[in-house]
Length: 78
Image (cartoon, rainbow, N blue to C red; front, side, top):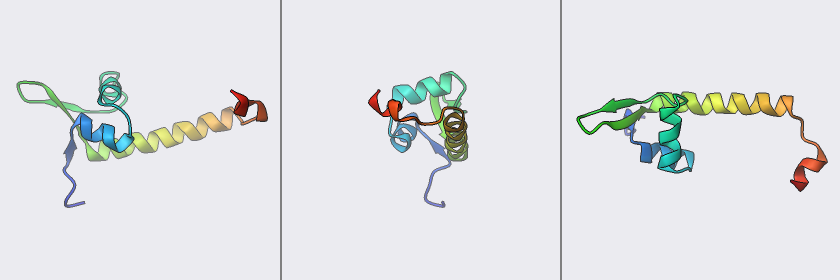
């Protein structure tokens, strides 16, 4: 992890999550993904450990969703 920066830009986070920077910005602004605002221009940064925690939480939320909403064959037709 020595080569990995402690903080990531929103674009970096978007790349990791394979989504858009706008979606990551929305996650940050809604408080779902912890971030800090730095500098006079207010650039957002996400700490790598916070991103990993967010990903782990999403896995848990998905597990709970799947448990509460079992797959049925009709779901595949949607």
